Length: 360
Ligand SMILES: *Cc1c(COP(=O)(O)O)cnc(C)c1O
Image (cartoon, rainbow, N blue to C red; front, side):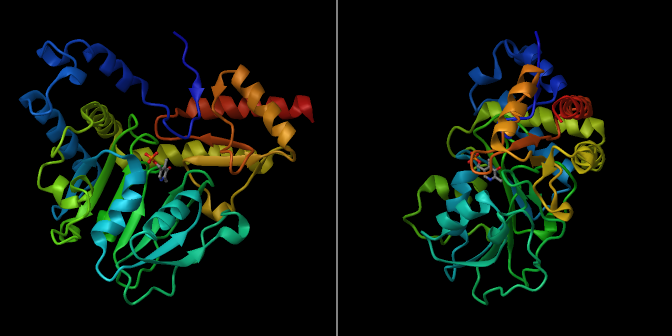
């Protein structure tokens, strides 16, 4: 067996102890005589897996009792539609567009109402987060939307926007469980899990109870109503049992290492290793304004696309995989999620330092 350092933006690297536990339980889950992927979602054994997953997530994130946790399929992308569909009252939605994912979300919401882009960083290719302390929030806005960490552009909000009393909705896909957040600051926190938590095919939605509206447009597909999932313990239909099981393992793993405070400490240390290198390098440059740098996704470039490609090839040959930047941005991108060990980042920096010396 040989595992590489996997810098993929998603699906992404997983904690090795979790993979090993899953491997050990693969054929016979705790004496049930079957694999989790073979069992009924209505079985007692699986219900316990799901209940524990939710309880552990609540503990990890300190989720208040007046918030529901929903496990839904369709990835983060389905939420781009479900959010405006379900929160629509006045049909006015305010979006802060800071990169590819918030732009996609805003475009999807246009199908269901009037979208105001109340702030954007598009003028500088999404390399910063605009000042959101005094925005022109619409009096009729049903919510204010952000993508808190832009996976492709590598920016992150250091401070939540002032929504002037409106509900804040945040896509946390690529920063989910990377640091403590104050759940009460949000109406909805959601994310696809395949970036920072588990296998693809599951979105987790943390939603304030009063936002679960039973009087939505009756033509909304049953699956796309928040109340469908809330009223059926996320098992209206067959859920993604496997992903729930694996996420549950990751929650336990995070609790075991000291929770999100500890995770954040590790993430800050880890990102600093890479950013310090980029700041001292003559060959490589980070593309994001320092203040808004993501701890999870680190885009960087040389001075030419040819050199970028050569570096990507060299890193791959040396056991550092998936460092090619997203096609819309180019260059390189190191996604250094929770499960990337600091050793991986240190080894990458060592390699790039040597590469720079040899190719200066
Ligand atoms: C990956 C990603 C998405 C899309 O997730 P899917 O699960 O593929 O739908 C949405 N938002 C952010 C921030 C992402 O990183």
